[in-house]
Length: 116
Image (cartoon, rainbow, N blue to C red):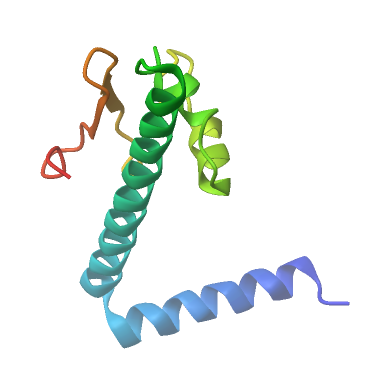
């Protein structure tokens, strides 16, 4: 069995190798790109759930939480788990999604990604 100390040393070595091989700026770019892909996917799934709700009830859902309950993807469950104490869902960048129940429009509030 691998000791906890040995596992931590291995993890530190892997991080050191990755940092040296790719450099911090490249890792940051990679993480930003991954968040952007996740944001696009979440918005697509939320919009599909909103459309599905509208098609079946003839009205937009009152909240993103209500919309997410109409979603068909496992990622919708993840979005629901990221609803904070104020009742707002957070995007992969940690910012709130904005939702207009009058129009069914959902957006990210992350600067630079508001028009996705």
